Image (cartoon, rainbow over all chains, first blue to last red; front, top):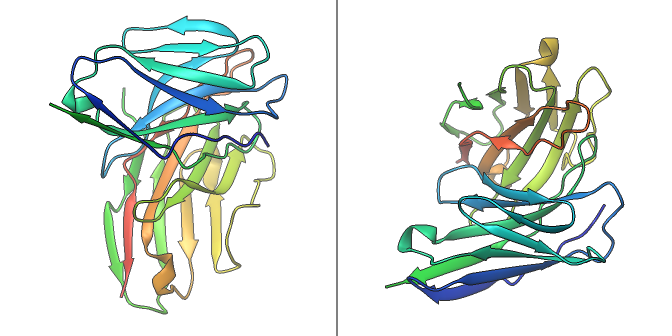
Length: 109
Length: 116
């Protein structure tokens, strides 16, 4: 199982770009990298998923270097509503998916 | 379409009693996961069902915990002789397993269990 390491917490201000990096040194060939967002009293919600290089959707970008041993979630121009816990999950369908401890992002005015 | 549904949303029980938590996955999703989240903590894997295969029970913390999935759809997590340390939010997630599609997990909003 690929173990992930993320910063415990990060602080930002509204309008700034936030980059959260996740380390996963023992990622397997068939593992994908998926990021989830969790608000209090809710289940985690899918943000973005990638395998290699760069993926972008309407809410975030995901940068994955060639060796795939880390990944960076980029949130452009954050707002107060982006305050949440962000989880990096590494794994593949058909396997046990184990979450790390997540990163608590606090966005201030 | 409907998302993952969990019931009850809140459950308060006395120490020593048994509880059953229910999860209705998204229709057609063959993979189903249970996680536990204690206050302010990350997600702890409990058990994983994939189609008709034997479930991966490696995360169950003790033999007081069990889960089943009937007809490849609804799942029930049972905790026998509850203890105060069982107090947590129990989250269920499902995903599809179509070939070549690494579908992400879809979570319910969990059942908050309080053991008094």
